[in-house]
Length: 225
Image 1 (cartoon, rainbow, N blue to C red):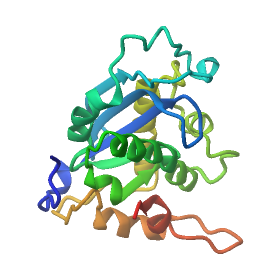
Image 2 (image 1 turned 60 degrees about the vertical axis):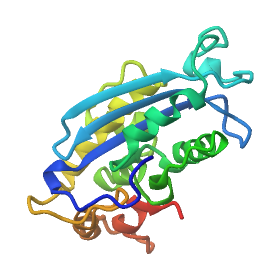
Image 3 (image 1 turned 180 degrees about the horizontal axis):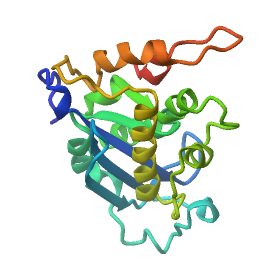
Image 4 (image 1 turned 30 degrees about the horizontal axis):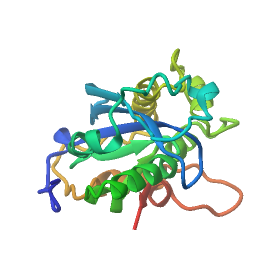
């Protein structure tokens, strides 16, 4: 079981778990059909990649979007069979996703359905949708495709989970560099995927807008509680 209270870690040791999911749809009854995870460090170096198709146990009306058909997942594991390995991958790492509430809502529901406890899903996550808009304020959209274009990042296999996770990891690194948000060299408290030092550095970097908005600190590191 993932540790409930990880000990403080040096900034250089902090790792990000960048997640992307492909699903059968957007609703409460829809399921995950593919998972991609990229583990990267504070410098943006990719340390590990993991992916799996998932048998959703239902029809897949979104094949035209991600290309995954019922035949593709016929022999794929169900979420229950990959849940423990996935939880271990995400444990004690900063969770990152583009439009993170979508991915994390599905993850929380899938983990709950198989009764696998995963404490970090109740805590903080990093959303590159928000961070990307802060780094590229002139971007006409917060979509992953548009922000990747703004950052000069190529994603030749869009709408496949691992490729999107890899592209999101590259976008994260580009945004942190552009906003000068690299974690400091000294140690900082790291609990449940929350980096206070990174949050503090992010706050003054958010571009000013005509209407009052929340800071990057509030928007980017968001609580699931």
